Amino acid sequence: MLIRRHLAQCSAMGSILPAHVVTAETVEDLPNAELYPEEEAAIHHAGMGRRREFATVRQCARVALAGLGLPAAPIVPGADREPQWPDGVVGSLTHCDGYRAAALARDTDVASVGIDAEPHDSLPDRVLPMIAGPDESRHLSRLRSEIPEVHWDRLMFSAKESVYKAWFPLARTWLDFKEATVAFDPATRTFEAELHRSGAFVDGRPVTRLTGRWLVRNSLVFTSTILTRSRPVLSDEHSGRVFGADGGLCAVGGSRQ
Ligand SMILES: CC(C)(COP(=O)(O)OP(=O)(O)OC[C@H]1O[C@@H](n2cnc3c(N)ncnc32)[C@H](O)[C@@H]1OP(=O)(O)O)[C@@H](O)C(=O)NCCC(=O)NCCS
Image (tube, rainbow, N blue to C red; front, side, top):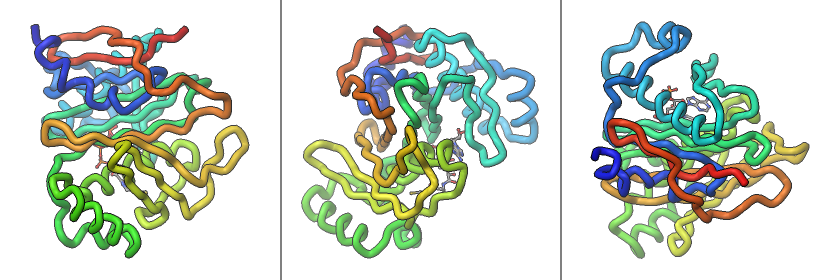
């Protein structure tokens, strides 16, 4: 069955998020993914490829909503393209060639989440100076000489996109690539992002630093970052897969005690 065939690839994003974040991921577009009229209105101008990724990633989100025990709902882009989630839900979407994913959680557990997937290859030469400061460039050079098989520049780009997707719903403002300094720890496959801009708050406290996790698998890089609520939450033990659907879609995590 397709679900079984894709399961190992499918759990990439789920493997870098804690169990209370439900992920649904697919390596191919879902031909039967349907849109609500308000989603249709938001995408009516787009070409076929964009429509397919838009619909598939929303189907992923609805699978993740079900994993949280919530009904299906439209996920319409806001004025800044941010996905607008049902009340009580936070989440993030990503898509790139050969991969679409949604990661959702209850807002009582998680204040914000950001995920990103990118092809695992070098960034075009002109891009790195636009997204990384001198200290970050030196950090990436060191990592490249130690572990040359990882495209650290692409990983930094992805980590910053994840940070932005977690930042935006809290701050509702732009965050420039150079307004966060990212450092990777290859031993733990984690990263830290120090923010140089204020505007995001969790439980009344300013967000000055985010932590995240990363993974390189199947020619893709995956990054995730979450901002949890003040009270302690479970760490990264996975409670198991929730269910799958046609076309290689699967959901992991999310069992609520
Ligand atoms: C918004 C952005 C991060 C999305 O990246 P992308 O290359 O389109 O990559 P992905 O496919 O992984 O993600 C697309 C999804 O991101 C989500 N997204 C878009 N804008 C968003 C925002 N303002 N806040 C949260 N999520 C957002 C959407 O769900 C979108 O999917 P959809 O259009 O199908 O709904 C990117 O276009 C961008 O503007 N980056 C500049 C800002 C930034 O990254 N700063 C770095 C700070 S350190």
